Image (cartoon, rainbow, N blue to C red; front, side, top):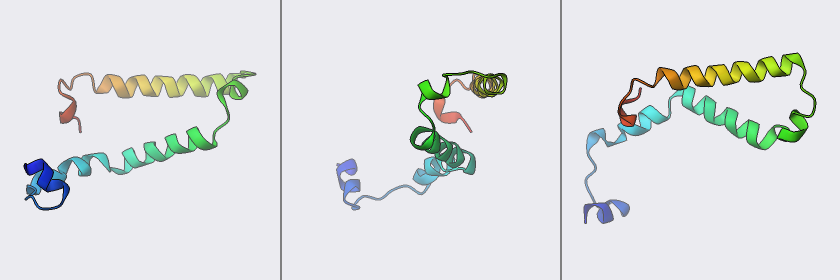
Length: 85
């Protein structure tokens, strides 16, 4: 019943409940989200982008891939997803 009451603003919400939002809305996470939005809606279609692959384009793509792998690898020691910082 507490969940149903919280939907209508009738339940008491603990003080630490907003801590998850603080972790989600960091400047880095907002920047990554905005970059994803720009790439999805304003970027070129993938078949147009990869029609001709030049060395600078391949180097950029490989650099982004390497950065993504490093970012995932750095989180490999976190055994529980909610303890990530």
